[in-house]
Image (tube, rainbow, N blue to C red; front, side, top):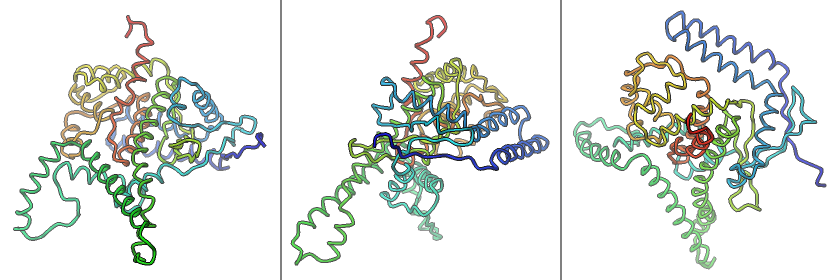
Length: 416
């Protein structure tokens, strides 16, 4: 029956209407203590708390969430939007079955993309019996150590002559790591994984051709365990398409629609198993923390993104950041430019060094971060974290450049 649908019903806990505001109020009281102890600046604390409380209170505003879901779903049906060509789907809202305490939406089948992230780690030989956050942190530490020529085995020798013997190796590895860059390191990791999987697949196929009577049982078991290696290797290529799709869709939400999901963590992204589509689809769920931007706010964010993507001068980048309203103690142009590139550029070798960050924060101190940019940055941070967990180093500026440029192009030339 075409009129029957599998649905998901999101129901608000009875106590949520008072527990969430109470929790937020407790955080506000804690911030006041921090201000009194001179740990944080009063103005920046108040502004940050206002944005934080507004966003988290939206989690219990089901009418707003339903409106956001409807807006994004309608946008996904536009043939000029990237959803169709990127194979990304959004659940349909059933307004007649939704209230201020309940949201009914279309069921999208498939595992969460965080499960795929774990499979990626397992392909690299990384244990996945910890949280995704811990795994990503360790993986990033390993990339950092490779870039800086350090050992990643976690074993340190106590013998001085052994350490001295290692020093030239560490120096050589550091030079090589800094020369080839983060992108090359991640590319090599993915390439080695892919070659290893293809070799396993070829070996398994060869073993399975050997007549049963002369085939050792251990070989047969190994071949069965690794017969899906070719499909896993193909999946490594697919993850790059997924990352590009997620950046494209969220860039469209931010700059074209002006309504975007600021909570796009891996648990809110599904890998839809659709046999009709060669690569499957991605499904986006949970729109409880959406942010809406005015045209003027989108324009100011777009100019900052473009200045980073186009590798403009420190002065140009810093001025675009200042126009958004960021306040720092020393108003350092160098700090604002480096900070912007760190937020929306590509990870560089220097970013993997703690000393670089210490030097950056010794230049200046952020007193106020623009509220319209905070959730945009949160979205980019979640997407870039997912990409890095899949060994893909993205420049947010480059990913969103076309969307940002479209916003600027819609302005009259005399006000660009």
